Length: 354
Ligand SMILES: NC(=O)CC[C@H](N)C(=O)O
Image 1 (cartoon, rainbow, N blue to C red):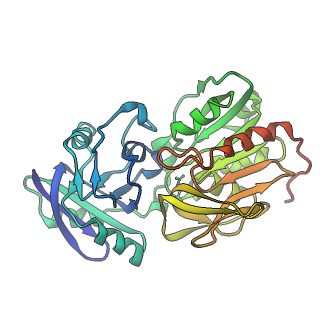
Image 2: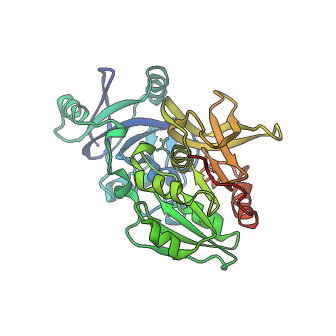
Image 3: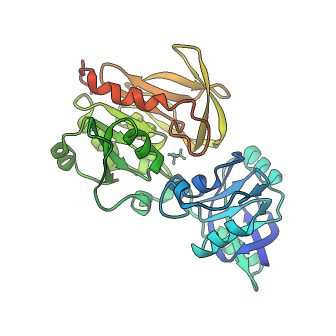
């Protein structure tokens, strides 16, 4: 065990128990999920953030690679009331600092009351509160990470076969593997493509759907993905999850804005405006779509009315702000992937107005 300090943007420096050593910084976020720590820790959407688990015991069913959503831990550090030794071993092996024996209820309340905040962490035998404060002083805001796509995206084009019934071009802005799996399970081959893939390559692939993935940071920093949407809307059916919804909305004349502390858990209620049905969803985002542009809001968050689903039937566009692929969380909205693939049977009826 070693010393550990957490410096917060609200001026506090909190002492904790050090579990995995190192110094780092990031935007302090949380998840209220009580299971799924392997999936959350490997979700690329947490890049440049520090993840606090509000559930008190994390690691109690071990660490298994088949549950990973990518090939590494993405949050810069992790915080819990208590981490098991298994999970600490994993943090150590990836050089990700971790702290526990800290009042995570207090921490989550502070983020919920004061909004998203930066933090600095120092863990080690000789660290001081000043070290954590220095990390905090060097912490950038999420929108300042302009190259964040390059940090998480695949560099090479990779194809995951699902039977070849349809063919999806997935622009990897930090994609979770469960999105690929969900499409493969429905007979689709999936081309996972770098976040900055050019339009010519997409054109040459001649895929049935262009899909923009989830991903970390400010959607405004994914300019190439946005220009692909602008280029192909009306020509190929378009789909997006989380950051993908945000990028597609921006491309189609909409806006995105930073939320106070975001939606962070696996029990976020979403109402479908056509059917009135409410489903429980998995969410971890700090930005939201303000104006939907050429899209219609078809689903809203029951807690705050923000846009959870956007669609345009004429243009063949469908997006979700939450994570229909779950992992972690409930499977209530897996039919999104059926709706995405069903678009390949519709003819595009209109072109976008400019
Ligand atoms: N899970 C995600 O794709 C997150 C999207 C975006 N980075 C946000 O925080 O809003």
